[in-house]
Length: 258
Length: 215
Image (cartoon, rainbow over all chains, first blue to last red; front, side, top):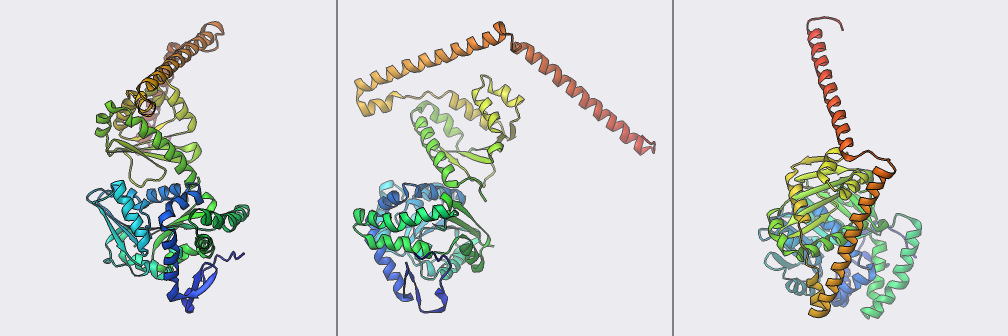
């Protein structure tokens, strides 16, 4: 099993990670799109089953860290099925705005329908956008969140720079992402769960074991806590820090634009 | 860096928030008063557990519980877990608030207003039972539950009175409350006199130092 949590040499050749496989950089976006097209309709159900509902607690704490208040503009990248956007919509009120962005049209479609069903309309815009080249004005957003999305981005450094550009000075970025467990025994249990149980659950519920195997592999290839903090520093964010949750299985990173 | 696992704390707060909001939804007579407090932020800091919890009152009315908040609370209450436990169990919370180690920062009026609204909440437990079980069964179960609550309230009050009587009259283990209060007032009075005397001595010493007299 590959436990390499260091950043791959993405920037130095024409290939990149797609789980444990090296693929052409240009091909990764369409491969990731294939995964999320496949799981979109059952994404929330699978998240609940995979995490035992704990993903709601991780997202709840992320929302607290955002310090979102009425009148602000919040950009939720890789917002998928819109659960964070729905919460932000209430916090920013009618005078604020929430932009739900995702590169994947199938996920956005599910998210938009779900938001309408919840009555979260009026202050939410839905935009299909690539995190590496955000189609928004410089200094136009108070807070950016990206929950369980950064690991699927081909060039993470480019995406971080793009987010920094869009943020207003004093604005903050919150990256909620799977990370590295802080204890060895938890890491072993987590590995067993991810590589044995998760694909079986994916096959039974979403009829798609491969996509869920990719999700587990992509988590292992994602930078660990300190590496990601370093990448945020490198991109130009200041006062970067992280909070481990559930023994480091997930971490939320926070950085500000000076 | 947060000391507690934020996910664990979020789980506890999420459960409490749901229960409180459910109770508020079942007490329509309190809605107007709670709406008046909308926008109020109360912080509770439990120093012995290094734990902070924030209560935000939203329109609706609704409560939001948070473990992290960057806004300045209207009221911040700080104390140990024992202090808060004593406050929760007290018959006279105002007296416990004054005499315990609980520290209050900011405006106490919003805290008192919230406490009064919560204390005066008339929760209609029958409504959800009727909704789920129908008029007859729902009402019967609600009546039974009301009886159990009344009995347990009576039993609790009776037990408290009997224990108090035993400690005071039979065992003579504790002094009566009035005697204790008189004693505390005396202690407070002596403490104030000592403070005043110290202030006077400090003033005299400062004057003496100004005139160049060695103390």
